[in-house]
Length: 335
Image (tube, rainbow, N blue to C red):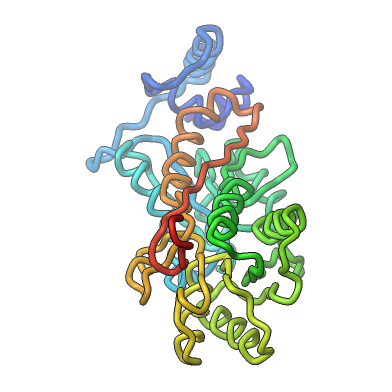
């Protein structure tokens, strides 16, 4: 019996697009020529459409590839929000979901029948090559790639950093620290965090003192605590800290509290992510809101609605972030 894959190979149309054409998807935008080519090929090959399951699932399947372990997802909810966004879109559109975790043995096996892949996190060249072979419809979330054949969705880190730093400098801060984290690809290759680059760019452009206050460790609460403790012991403190994630900021806040510093009277802190916990620290954390859930939701929409029709044209998206002002930054009078 002929399959979707057989029709795809005969027509040169992606399997995902073939599936949606044959299922009369009203949101599928293709030329009439392409639609007729698929229908004719299906007839010639004797293709018979499978009946939907009792649960009403569609014939379209999205594979979610997670770069991080389930334990890491629990510790930092940023990636959890992205996954929830993807899954919510799939539930609302009756799309079947297959999940795979890169740290698992033979993680590609559950993905072989997927029409599209959404990859969350940081992947090395070998992994990307392997994933490209699995599906023509491929999207990476939270990883910038120069490869013009691969679609990506990322945050606009440059403007996010400008918002945070403008807010600090407008409130009188000229000595600003940066507490960041490291992320690694396979073979221990370091993935460069754009937040650090844009922080340095801003400080040098505005002649701010930062060199003695820039530390990089891990994206965790413990690392935030340890890095802040290191600055305290040096006895050379900035007046404000930008942390590259809320867990880092929360760890730094805890270290300051333990050593008798008052936030924001003695030192101000800005985080990044706007996790649920950031609104319940003492004081509540000023932070950059990262639309992680929307990245996942839009990502699933891109591989379902857009890429099947234009599989040869990659999409590069950057979502804006916004500053959430709470009580961890001391404002100048009248600011």
